[in-house]
Length: 285
Image (cartoon, rainbow, N blue to C red; front, side, top):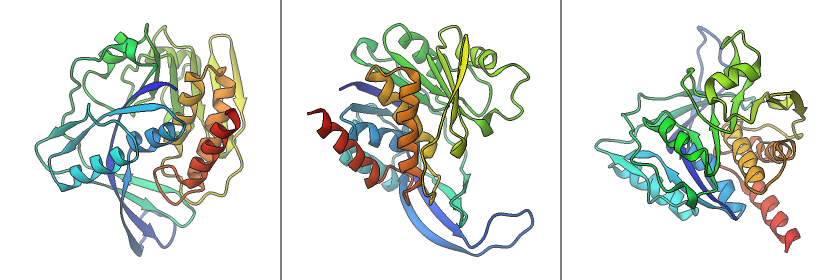
C-alpha cells in the first residue's frame, strides 16, 4: 500500500451535549461527554491505517499529560508519530458543542505557532495531505508537487494551498469569491490543480475541473454525529487516489467513508468503517 504523510491537527476534544438546538440568546442545559481523541490528523489517519497504508502525522502538541495521552493514543492505533513536534506548555482542549440532531459547533483556543521543519524526501511518499495552518506548509506542498499526490483542504482564509486536489465544503465557500468554483480553486491551488472537490453533506459533492463539473451522490446514512465527516471524506478520497482510481470513483469511495463517519458516535472513524475495509481487503485476497 501507500506511504501517506498528513500535516493536520491532533486534538483532545471535550464534548458538550446540549438539550436542544443552538439559538441566539437562548439558555441550554448540557451533559459533559468527556474527552476523546480528535482532530484532522486522527480522523483522517486512522481510516487510512485500517485500509493498509503506512501513515505518518506531522502536528504539534504540548509537553504535558494531555500531549502524552494524544501521542500514545494515535501511536497505538498505528499512526507513525516520529515527525510530531511538541511545544512548551499545555495542550488545550477543543470544545465540541453537540445538538440533539447531531450537528456540532467547534470552539477552539488560539494555537501556539507551529513551524514545519525542513521537508522530507518526497520520493519516499505517495501522498501529502495538508489540513493545517502550520508555517511552511506552502513550501512543503510546492516541493512535493512533482513527486507525489498533494491533497489539501481549503483554509478558513484565502491563503495559498498548492495541490493537485483541493477539498472544501459548500459552507466554507459561502461568500468567498464571485469567480466560478474552478477559477477560484486555481487562485488557491495554482496551476497544478487537477480537481476541486466541494462537499455538501447529504446532497453529495461536486468536482470542478478545467473542462467539466460533475456531481457524485452522498451515501445514505443515519446521522448521529457529523464530527469528523469531512476528515473521513478526505481520507476516502486519498485512499482512492493512491490506488489509482479516477477522481469520480475516488469520490464515491470518499462518500462511503463519510457515511460511516456520520453514523458513529465519535470524531475518529468507528467500527463500521473498519469492518468495511477489512471486508474490502479480504475480497482482494
